[in-house]
Amino acid sequence: MTLAYLTTPLIGIVDTGVVGRLGDAAILGGLAAGALTFDVVFSTFNSLRSSTTGLVAQAHGRGDTGEEQAITLRSLVAAVAIGVILIILTTPIATLSAWFISPEPGVVDAMRTYIDIRMLAAPLTLINFSILGYVLGRGEGTLGLLFQILLNGTNILLSIWLGLGLGWGLEGVAWGTLGGELLAALVGLSVLARRFGRAGRVPWNRVVDLPGMLRMLSLNRDIMIRSFSLLAAFALFTRQGAQLGTATLAANAILMNFFLVAGYFLDGFATAAEQLAGRAVGARHEPAFRRAVWLTSVWGFALAVIAAVILLLFGGALIRLLTTTPEVREIAGTFLPWAALTAVSGVLAFQMDGIFIGATWSRDMRNMMLLSLAAFVLWLFAAADSYGNAGLWIAIHLFLVMRGLSLLAILPSRTRETFA
Image 1 (cartoon, rainbow, N blue to C red):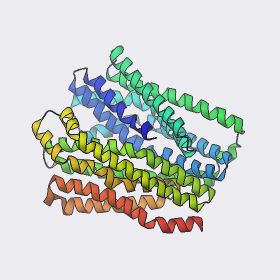
Image 2: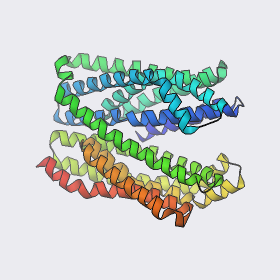
Image 3: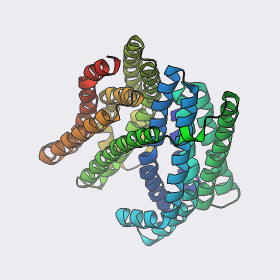
Image 4: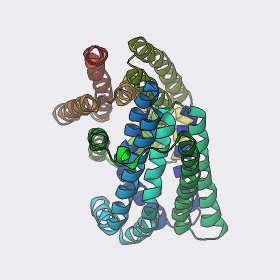
């Protein structure tokens, strides 16, 4: 799954390259603004993937294949319903995004074009979240990798062909994304249909079981609040960085990309933590749960150190590749260690998120995220100004460390309660 998640940033790089070759800054700005809109929307509803993974993993641990099927079908119903609502709300979403970002008129036109096309893929994107959640809940990492390669690979190839080969430009990139989501959804649904057909279909009244639906909605709500809090922290980091000048803002933007790449790198072991913890909770087997915590600790910190070393060794070259402005290069180089070490300070947060999602302890995860966000905001506005840009990076590290330690602190009591 680490390999699978690392294919995701390639889409943004390719889309930027395709549109960048058109030579129109307004269109490139429209792509960036539109992509940011979907980052917010789909990061919010990625809770469908996480909740499905945790619930399926627990059903898998109990050996309850009928409940695995019912959970997945509930998730698919929710995906279609939310996706249709998002399509209906396309215009208000685009208008709100344009107001918040406040770009120039040419950028607004390009952004609206991109959003109008790509929002048609909303139900397909959410369906793919649900399918991936089912696959990961069963611990089928290889199938998850193949699914992500199909989805992201088709997206990339179609974007290049439609955007450059046929000369559709920005519209081609948007249609390419829709095509990738459609193909992945069709293949994923065919896999589910074949599996569920062999296992015997569960009664529809079990799928729409009220307690099961309420549990999934509650889990989704808590994970959505957690996602909003995470986005709020990054938005505040960007806003405060802008107050330090354009060069600092640009340097921090480059360095935050390093943090996001490290995050995708660590997401693989976090997904393993979700599946292993969920399976152990479903089987009511505490030794397996404790072993899952130990194994994901060892692998998580090992991967974090590797990611940090890679960023420290090659970060300077990447900075020179991404910007030619001497002042931006200098600032980014100065704060490169701060960005590289986010992999280490954030690894416990990634692991604990995976454990708590798998165990479906979403309320604790939500509460500790809100507590960490409060500490982040308090430091940001009370003390960060005294340290300049270093103060901003201290705030990010404080946020990550507090998320991990606060969840770790309540892990023993939650474990005792669950396995009592």
